[in-house]
Amino acid sequence: MRYLTAGESHGPQLTAIIEGVPSNLPFSVDKINEQLARRQKGHGRGRRMQIEKDEVKVLSGVRHGYTTGAPITLVVENKDWTHWQGIMSVEPVEGAEEKRRVSRPRPGHADLNGAIKYHQRDMRNILERSSARETTIRVAVGAVARQLLEAFGIRVGGQVLQIGNVVAKRIELPLEELIARTEESPVRCLDEEAAPKMMALIDQAKEEGDSLGGIVEVIVEGVPIGLGSHVQWDRKLDGRLAQAVMSIQAFKGVEIGIGFEAAGRPGSQVHDEILWSEEKGYSRKTNRAGGLEGGMTTGMPIVVRGVMKPIPTLYKPLMSVDIDTREAFSASIERSDSCAVPAASVVAEAVVAWEIANAMCEKFPSDSLDDMLENVKQYRAYTEKF
Ligand SMILES: Cc1cc2nc3c(=O)[nH]c(=O)nc-3n(C[C@H](O)[C@H](O)[C@H](O)COP(=O)(O)O)c2cc1C
Ligand SMILES: C=C(O[C@@H]1CC(C(=O)O)=C[C@@H](OP(=O)(O)O)[C@H]1O)C(=O)O
Image (cartoon, rainbow, N blue to C red; front, side):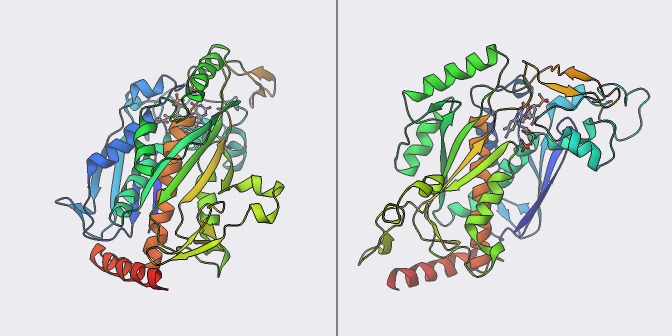
């Protein structure tokens, strides 16, 4: 499978075309909207989230509730566009190019590098596309991937493990329960002591005109052994997951399993001993590898974490240089999120779901769900007996 997204933050809509989704997959628009709504929640978001109410339109590739195998087109409209029509107009509009022109690059954003690279003197032409508004449509794409994974009993959940300097206890629960409980938390955190502290810290940062980042974790359960491959660098599933998570706006680090902690531990406390039983076949005593060895799934839960930097737009302004005058200025802003870690955890789940669904389609014949179900069933029986 593959997909592309298009659309600007304040343009009329975001669009994705997904190619290669197996035919005959039961397809629910409501399930996509559920994921879009999850992404819009979370303590610390700015005024834009009060304007938007993200809902998907499906324009192709689905008929009478099932995929047909043809490319699927997803669209989410930007409600804010009504306020930006002239400024974002495709056709020239008199005077509009000067209105909301951006000549002052924001530190921590794509503005300056993009302007230089693409020969733009109005940095709006960069920021409109680099904005994390684009994560909306990636969550919609991920929601399609989730529906494919569901057909094989593969579930994806996640939690927030850190916001600013508040570190949560990592609580292990059956995945269904974890998914239900994180929905109840405005910061998507299961640690009941840490969650209120995270919220208070976000409020404090907002008051002080500052911003916060954090750590999110994604867990995938029910994956067969052997997705991905050790034979070529770009087929290694751990590498592909890292790229997917790192591609989320503001993500600066990724780890799988115990990740960075492995550096300080002796090997005896890193590697997972192999077990075999009549009922389960092969498994691991522990899951420090986070479900991946040699670029392939081990059949244990996949555990991926990502670090999000603090939001770069600050009400407490940082210094920059105006590209017209080359004079220093201190940035002024109208609105921004103070913390988007809870929202980003939903985005991380979506991009991970996509990579796993894609790996499933590579491993098994995937023109139709019928082919795929049959093959996965046979393969699972084979791995249990191996
Ligand atoms: C869900 C989400 C919401 C974000 N909201 C904002 C925001 O309101 N203001 C802002 O300056 N950056 C925001 N960002 C981060 C920027 O989009 C990102 O830092 C920027 O595009 C530069 O890219 P880089 O940090 O990946 O290098 C958000 C990121 C995510 C994932
Ligand atoms: C719109 C979304 O996030 C936006 C991401 C973003 C950025 O610079 O990345 C900046 C803000 O947009 P605006 O400048 O319009 O207030 C966020 O609201 C969204 O998540 O749907």
